[in-house]
Amino acid sequence: MDTTEETARRPKRSVLAAILTGAGRLAGVGGVALLGMIVLLMTVYTVPEGHVGVVKRWSKAVGQVGPGLHVKIPIADRIEKIEIRQRKNVEDLAAATQNQLPTTATVSINWTVNRESAMDLFIQYGGLNQFENRILDPKLRNAAKEAIGKFPADQLIRDRQAAVATIMEAMARDLEGFPVTVNSPQIENLSLPKAYLQAVEEKERAREDAEKEKHRLEQQRLVAQQAVNSAEANAEAKRIEADAEAYRVTVEAEAEADAIRLINEQLSQSPLYVDLVRAKRWDGILPQTVLGEGVGAFLSLPAPAMDR
Image (cartoon, rainbow, N blue to C red; front, side, top):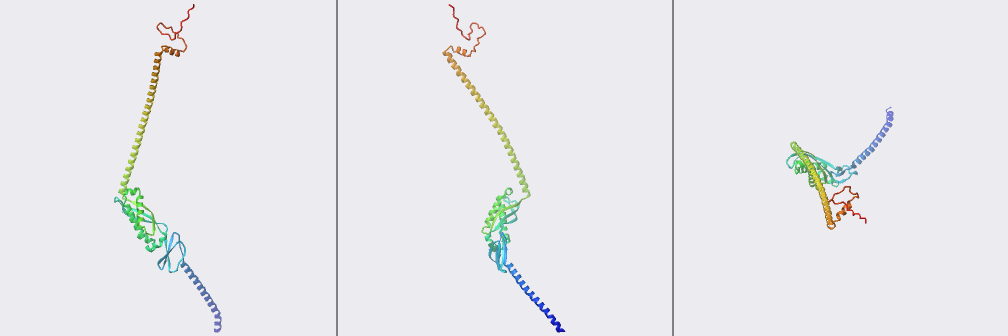
């Protein structure tokens, strides 16, 4: 009876062994596929836009790649991604103006890593954070303090562009030869002692009042000048009018004198000239008044002929 039971169990064991064998084979294939997938993932990598990849082989930088899909040696290679887009660093600092007034300022600067020199920056400084902490930020603080110290406080309040230009000049000089480009520094905030600011406000108000008074006096001067100009113009017009009247009288007098002279000349040359003038002026109407003796007749008539 035991033999019969053992014989019955053998097929079941054979099936189980086959299943186990098949499962083992599937596990092996899956393991190989999984291993292949892991190797593939370890081999392929991407670099995003705005970055470059520094290839480190056994921790030593051996090359630089641009954005896109790339292949590396698994385990041996690691990729350090460095941003080459514009970055902005901001520093809060304490400084003193040219006239020794204490101030606090917030200064910023934009900068970019030169694409072709990204690997050099990594080799020399170990990455962006190290470069910022060890090189860029200290130089920005020094340049800003130096620039603020070259200008009086009132100029910094009115116009900061000269100080900004000085910061840019210093940063360009101090970072010459480094694998970066700096631009657009700004003094974003500038705080001065409250008492000084009040004094500046009072001075500014006094200056504005003086400008207003100057403007008012200038307007008054213009009005007075206009009145003077108007009076001078009127006087000139009257003078011209008087000159014209005098000229007219002179001409008329000269004409009358010339006429009298001509009349006298005519009288001296012919006693009948008076009769001629009277005749020209006669309107043809005989006088109605009988004149007495001794009064000259207006018109001499010839005597009537006597009958013979």
